[in-house]
Image 1 (cartoon, one colour):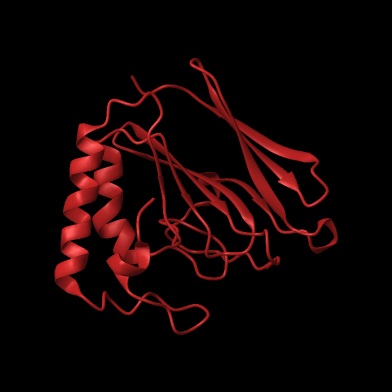
Image 2 (cartoon, one colour; image 1 turned 45 degrees about the vertical axis):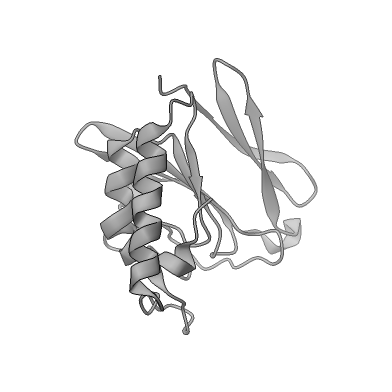
Length: 172
């Protein structure tokens, strides 16, 4: 888990970007810690989680600070997936860069649901593999099923019905 508010600052408008870190030195130290931790990991599955998403088609959209600074670290260290909230829905976004694929999961509809989906020009429709925000289903949550051979993320609606699943494989 990383502190995305420490890294990027806070958000003061519904569709705005974080305003920048309150303490730039602390943010830089946290970025260095992330890079070191990722580069030293030998885990079969390497997950990174933070409040702000790197990519999202929900109301808040992508987080520029994380796309600029964090995403290159995730890619170069072969991270399995990045998990976030901030937008109040369920999403799976898959991005391939120079032959490297990274999966982004938004799991933010446990408290309330925001059905807004926005057409961000830098997130092509083919990157968005799943989007769910059904008010009648009372939100949703994620469940991870992990074995030595696979890790499957299940998105479930508020009643516990499995509405989407995606399988990831060990990185080593």
